[in-house]
Length: 258
Image: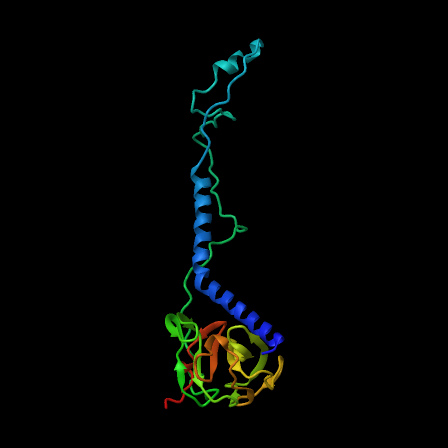
């Protein structure tokens, strides 16, 4: 391994370890920060200075006699205005109407869970292989590569290195990028907020950002660029997202069960 390749490999390892540390400990760090903010807020809310009146300086001016004699008892408040006279019997009260310029209370109703569009339930998978790691966002599955339990927002489908990867629906290539965890990734945008993500591809896929692609068009080839899944046999990491939220690809297409 030459020096350039070794530096590149060491840099990718450093970024991987940093990403794993933040993924594993990010929730704890956020929790500590939130507790610190709540503690400061509670201290400011419940603490107040003693209501001790300021000392009154003595003076020979007789005009101050009435003021000194009317000083409040300890713990009292100095009046700043004359008391309001009681309303007369014939007084008219004006009701207070809400100010329309104030911000309304936000709607905190939870959004319903996303479900797959039944019209898209017969899509052909991007490769003809078996699912070896299932979709898991509300549970944890074991990662052989990282040796830890973690979520998995897609499915891993077996395929041989160099096998073609097909786009599942017509759309537009939104990005072609290199990810520290998932290697070479192609993301395609479709109608109705649907996106498909193809990862661990071979470098330099045959599409670029902005390309219009058809269903079953080749958008890449199976590689081994996903270092976060390199302990598994060669495969495609495939995701489907609706409005940015991941959904189970197996709810929209049938993969090979052999």
